[in-house]
Length: 553
Image (cartoon, rainbow, N blue to C red; front, side):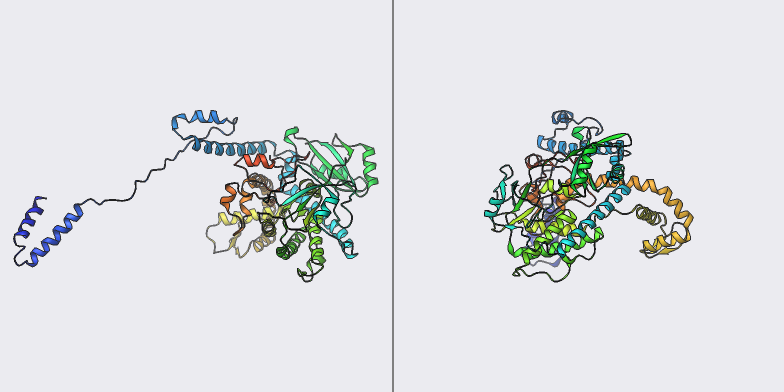
């Protein structure tokens, strides 16, 4: 510092005289050194450090703690109450998932769990449903070719609704954010006849009371198929609120077979007695879509046709006249008829309610959840929620997914392919190496064909050794998919430019649950309880409470 001042004095002495080049150099050096010494003044505000609270949750395999108990564990951590509540919600979710995993591991060898998650059982059930869909298609095609649906009409005025149906006050809602009304069907109205052509699952069916857990679905179907006129079985999942009991419904080809079954009263399967009862008549309800935008109906017609193509292919259905020929123009007088027939086809053949955006594994389940029919109101009512856009997005999502269960041999082949990809590191790019020799192939299909021909013995041995491993792995995967779908599937149906994720998180928008691939229908809470529970996704189309509880395991 003293050196700098001394040099300054020398420069100032000669400041009035001629300044030499050396003096100018000294001046530059001094200015540079002084500028480095001056502390820089920062105008930025001090940033507050975010305190991260990392806690270790209590054991998840023990009893769930209350919030007060949870709070006592972390008193010394000085965590704010709001942050602690969020941590407790995370703890609750982790605990619930852990309990489901423990329950699954404890009961995975029981028949009803095997029916639900075993890929072999699921494949058999899918083939059974495909065959039933083909039978329904053949019957529908006969009626269509005969012109039976020419006078179909699923678009009604308010006056017609009041004449045909009784308003259900419990479900009536004129809120502009609720896109439907619900009505009770008058006893004098037959929903199965023209111009509605609905289907009543209670006709030609009997009630099956208390199906024991030790009996698998295959056991029950095998015994029922010996009865004259048997068509299908609808079996509920165990109700954990009633000691995991199951109930079911048996459909027959006519009323006479139902009466014969009820007169026999019971049937014995593996030492267990199943009791039959006459199906009780219940009040039927329908729903009315009150916010139809006519300029979007043409797109609805196109979406329905594309969806029918996908579902027909999954069920092995071909030769469908509904997907042939040009689409009707909006001004065509037969446009509404084509739209109604396609809507009816999706419900009756594929158990898909287009105006709900929901698919069910069984028609009886569809009726119990979304009604015996879904009509459109001829007069547009105000609805803030762009429901037709949501429906079309759900339809697109279903078209892009596949609900096919792969056969067990294909699952084992996939595991063998993965073994080769993991074990053999020295392989060409995009090549599939053989685990038994040094050959590599361009595709998994060629690899499996090579192994089955050139390494037949080793291939058979690997199939036998991997069989149970693949089944256990696939069961765990299916169980995991079903567990996480309730929380994640909501986020898979957002519409670009229509609904934002922030709106959903703030509970400003409520959407229906559309079912993930290979996930069966489950029973959900009502809207009020879901709205109070911030951790659960909101559901616009309320899943109605019935005697059958489809609970999460």
